[in-house]
Every structure is written in C-alpha cells, then in structure tokens.
Length: 118
Length: 114
Image (cartoon, rainbow over all chains, first blue to last red; front, side):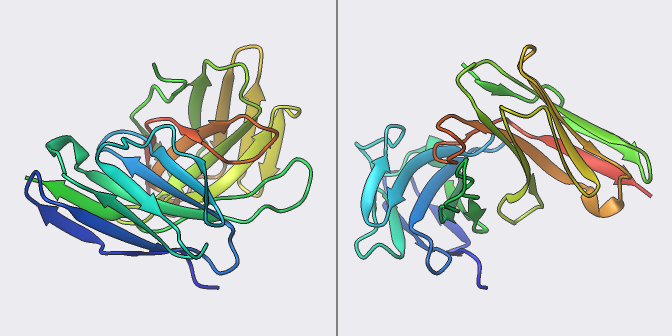
C-alpha cells in the first residue's frame, strides 16, 4: 500500500512570495490533515478535511493560508504571502475511521515539505 | 500554554537496557493518548496508543502506561535497540478516540548506543 505522498520535499522562497504544497493521501482515506512543525516543536494541526469538507480549521491563519481538497482526494495548502515565521516542515496525514469502539483512526503521515522563508 | 509536555529533550540509553520516555498533560478532557516515532527527513509513524479507560497497553517491546490522577504517561522500550534511535512524540486527543486535532508534545530524542 502506497503511503502519503507530498511534494515538493524542499522549498526556499523570499518573504512575501507565494508557495503551494501538494498532498496525495493513502487511497480510500476519507480524512486528511495538514500540520505545521516548527523546528524544536511538535506538529500543530492547521486544518482537517473529511472528504472535501472542512472539519476543523481553527488554527489556520486564514489571512495568508488556504487549503482545499476539491474532489475529496488530494489536497493543496497555499501560503500567500509568506512570512519568515512560516519556515517549518508542513506535514500531511490521512486516516480512515476503523469503525471500532472507540474509534481509532490512526493518522499516517507523509514525509513533509520543508519550507525556508528568507 | 502547552497542553502536552515532554520535559526531556533527549535521552541516551545503552543497547539492551530499558528506555523510559515521559509525557505530562494538563487537559483532563483528553481521553486518548498516542506515541509517534520520527526518523530524520521522514514523517512521524504511529507507534502505540492508549485509551483513558486503561492504564497499560503493550505491543511487543513497547508498553505505554497511563496515570490519569497524575496526568502522566510513559513509554517503555525493552530491550532498547539501536534502530529505536529517533525522536518520540507524545500526543493526546479528546473525542472518544478519534485522532482529530492531535495535540503533540515537543518530542524527546532517544539515542540507543551499541
């Protein structure tokens, strides 16, 4: 079974530029997550999709970040314009509810995109 | 305000000995706890989890203990192997086991020396 795919793996941009990241989840996984991991910190959830609908985007800086999952499969995360503090690894994860009790929908993470904003 | 805390940034253990990684949390509404393992340049990989209705869960060399009264959990690795060298993240969620909105700690880097 193929894992979560992300591209690009690395990206360097100047501040105020725009950048987009792509994620293709594990086939059949209905739930998709984007996390931001700043150096020395744990991952922080930015947005969670269930199919193509947003479940939780409470921690997404909506003035500059946007995400979409139009067909309920792959997803893009965009930053426009980027700031220095956006330098981080952006992780995508996907999960599929097990249906058991309690629900243990394990999240499977991609390798991440390392963004450097200069 | 950190809801999940891993106070030890690093831990060094000899091969074959026990590794104990600790995690504290502040939110009493958390009802599901997980440990993830991360190698450099890779995404985190799920390792083991525990529901708040249990106090212990074991999977091979890995055991997670939960002390709800102390809001503390620990991961025991016995015996430790060099391949266990990685960063270990503790994470918590609320909502009956659904892993939505996982709150992660900062991680502990484990080094297992041959």
